[in-house]
Each structure stands twice: as structure tokens, then as C-alpha cells.
Length: 67
Image (cartoon, rainbow, N blue to C red; front, side, top):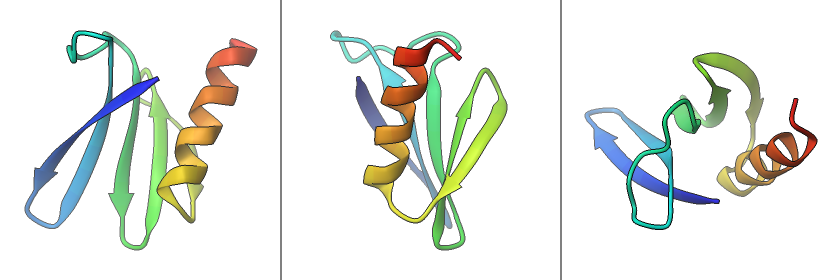
């Protein structure tokens, strides 16, 4: 699972990408909200995490479980 970072004023968003660094349609996104990281999939909020690594790990587990 690869992510590409997009920076905006006041927040960062990481978007799931394929091996060619192109955005995956309806993929996972992780965005900074205050001091937390929000994991979303198909525009549906999954959960907040304390670290970026925790959010990535949760995205991998979520994808493997096909939730």
C-alpha cells in the first residue's frame, strides 16, 4: 500500500496510490485533523489515530479484512 502526500495550508492529506504513483479510485485517505490522523475509505470515516503509522497499519488491516 503506497501513499502520496498533498499539503494544503493547515493540513496534509495522504492518498492511496498504485505502483505507478497514480491515485487509486475510491482508495484510502489519511488526513491530519488537529493532532490526530483520520482514516477514511470511500468518503466514509473509519477512525482517528494518534500516529500516521497507526493509521497506515489500520488501513492495511482494513483492506486485508475486506471490511
